[in-house]
Amino acid sequence: MVINELLQLGVEKLGEREYLDPLLESIIILSYLQNVDKSYIYTHGDKEIPEEIVDKFLNFIEKRKKGYPLSYILKEKEFYGLDFYIEEGVLVPRPDTEILVEWIINKVNNEFKDKPLNVVELGTGSGCIPLTLAYYLKNIKVFAVDIDEVALKVANINRDNLNLNDRVSFYKGDLFNGISSLQLEGKIDIIVSNPPYIPTNAIPELQIEVREYEPKKALDGGEEGLLFYKKIVPESKKYLKSGGILAFEIGYDQGMKVKKLLEKNGFKDISIIKDFQGLDRVVVGRLG
Figure 1 (tube, one colour):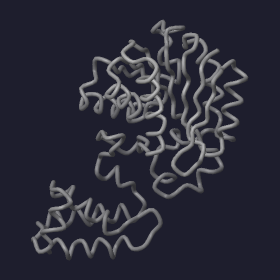
Figure 2 (spheres, helix red, strand yellow):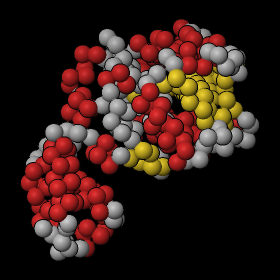
Figure 3 (cartoon, helix red, strand yellow):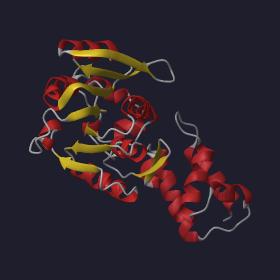
């Protein structure tokens, strides 16, 4: 079977489904299996494909048809210009989270320049937030926490790949419990988190890739989606320096609720930052 025939078969099997581009995804999967650039697939349509590759391709297409995330198939996801290793059991990095990362990068560059900073990140998952921050900000040291063994394994792989072992450390634990033995109270300049924030009853309404295959504990934020903000905000005050920054990714309708939670706990200069669709996506504040 040649490339064009196999692509056509992939398109037919994937069919029409929301959030899926059958031709593009077929090309991406085939280029991955052959270890070639997508341009090779476009320009070598009459090239014969080994039977072993055909079988793997059809297997991956069948998985994708059932909603299995493309990033789990490819074992990677690009995030803020960096390639991250991803596997099943870890939340796939989202473009929405790049808004949170970009805000922190700009804030540090504009306000702190080369001053050494201590950063804590809670719920690290693949490690995309702390590793991206450390990659682009040479003056920070990050203490990142997750409760899940698979997440920590993946985060450590990504740290090794990006050569950031000297400035990013990962700890196992439930939120601040993961760093409770490090004596960091009052020493942290920035705390950042993209916690689970989907209301429990909204999870069945998510697209199939998310609701069926991504880890529920990385999504489920309790009845209102605010469970983890209510845990993190009060305790963050023990760790932040005076004037320290707390920065969250939030759900599209949670901006005012999280802002009020910060105000109630003595935070000042609180801002709600919107995403490219004009929806609330990030809340930041300073400890007064």
